[in-house]
Amino acid sequence: MRWSEIVTERWITEEQVSKEGSMWVGYHRTKPDNLEQIQNKGFVVSNPDEQAYGPGAYACLDWKSITNGPVNLWGSMVLKVKMNLHGCLVLDVDLAKQIYGEKSSLEDQFKMFGLPLGEIPELRAQAQGDYDDEDDDDDDPYAGTYSAMTRRAAVLFYDSNKIKGLVYNCPNDGNAVVMWNPKDMIPFAYAEDVKPGADLSSVSWTKLTSVPIGKGSNSKLPKFSKGRDGNTLEKMGNRKKTPLNSHEMLHYLKKFNIGLHDLKNMGFTVDDDLANKIWKTKEIGGVLKNDLLVAGLGSPSNSDLISAIANDNTGNLIMTLAHKGPINQQMLDAAVKSKVRGVAYTSLQGYAKKNGLKFELDPARTATPPVSR
Image (cartoon, rainbow, N blue to C red):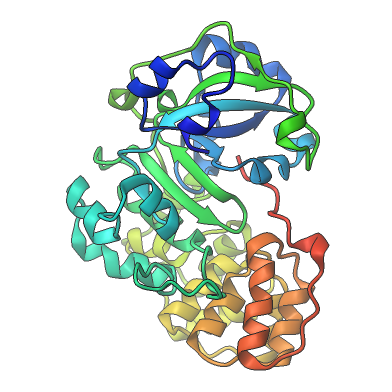
């Protein structure tokens, strides 16, 4: 929500808006027990190795996404936060235009921040070509699925000291932002006991009695292991001089949801023989298998491919297959059997239409899935 859209709220003045015109408002779900600490100290990073897009403060940029979050896990309280999104790398075309105007392409942003232009092709490959400023097709079934792209950007630029964070759109998060320095996200109001699906107009907000403004972007950031399990990836990294055999590699991959770029960044290689073993291993999730598809590694059998699609709850595998070429009814049915929801689920309708397949939309699954925080 743009800052200018909340000027009617009683504690926001026109003077503040004129001074902070670049500010945006977002929403962060938490547990009531955390309120006192947040009010006194602001957001702090917890479990940095478990945050896929880097340690930091996460928020949704729209109300629908945050009210779909799991109350029992993230908490029944919603904080309203303000943040200056200028200085963030924006990976969604529409959001980028809203924030940076016409000069908002990846090339424009990379030049503005002094980031290496040579990384852009890899980022676009991760997104399967979805980031295209000239593509105005509202029926594009691949739009809004940038999970791999966002993950790659975090791995590349978290400790570059050139950007503040990432603004992105992913199936699991909707429109969201991560500020790598939590002090760049400032809470200013809260609402208690916000039920899933609650209407914004029915929510009663309480102004925070103090606004914890920290040192901001110059503060030292915590270490980001750039993997879902820092200790294990560190142990794997220590084995560079003695390459892991396929048995050891599969042992690690079964336990941790990591991608091909995590392995490449540590100097490991995945050949077709190992890739084929990965395809046959049901315990290995869709993150790595989607990377294998993009890289063209391995030759999965039809049964292995169908099994992988049915167990991929992100929708990335079926998206990649639909983008690379025609998909069949068996592939689409497998995607329907998965737990994919929100934008990723709705995209199945576009794949079906494009390939002349049967598909019946379930309205209950079109809502944005729980937001990871």
